[in-house]
Amino acid sequence: MLTVLYDSSCALCRKTRYWLQDQPKYVELEFVPADSLEARRLFPDLDHASTLRDLTVVGSGGELYRGAKAWVMCLWALREYRETALKLSTPETMPMARRLIAWVSRNRLWLGSAMESLGFQRRTS
Amino acid sequence: MSIDFLVVTYCFYLVISISLTVWVARTLFRNGRVFLVDVFHGNATLADSVNHLLVVGFYLVNLGYVSLALKLGYDVTSARGSIEALSQKVGVVLLVLGGMHFFNLYVFSRIRRRSVLEVAPPPVVPDACVVRAR
Image (cartoon, rainbow over all chains, first blue to last red; front, side):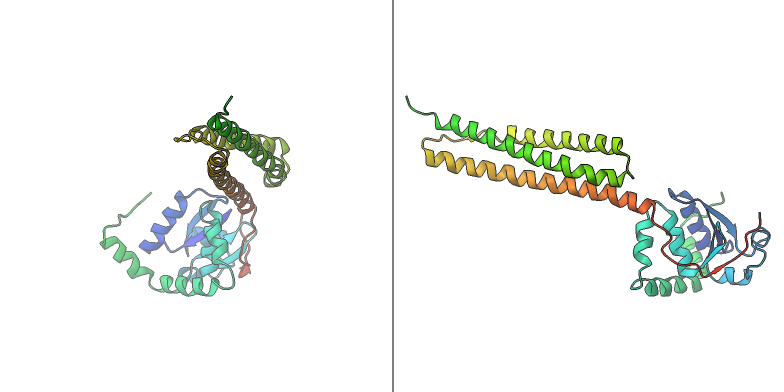
């Protein structure tokens, strides 16, 4: 099982969380809002401020993945996207993935609100 | 008594096409088995079953095509005409067999890719290790 610490205050992150939740999986994903009480309880010695900057994934043995690596791990957990994760994580493609993820991560707030104003609906469950 | 070249052509066509189909199907059956046993992690019963089903499909499609493509549409009156017609018909059957064979290989590789993906380890190394409560 992988625990995904996501920024619950950002629309794009919430959207992505529901998308991930709906995909068929090889490995179960558990979603916990970053820097929440639940997150602090689960991982007492984690730097929680950093989990608000980058998507963070923690494996069942405590393995911590941040940013692009966390994304690769999320895709790796999905049946339909494991191959993409393997392709994305080669030494040739990883730097590009890292830059893309860092950009999306920095701009996620306005990307999310842009998506919502373009008519992507808000989901609550 | 004159020879009916058309019937002779048909007979040769059937014998050659059916033999080729049997040969390709047997090759597929023999070599596919080893491959499928590996894909199904040593489960020989399942591998044999899938192998058998694939080969049955292969036979049905090929023999179906051979049967449909039998009719020549023009008369053959000489040995030369017979050989030419035969070569054309058998050529197309060979191409269809080749196409089907590659399609089967593609199916095998798809099955294999799935099974390889299922056991693929995480592709990235963790940044750190943290303690998980509970």
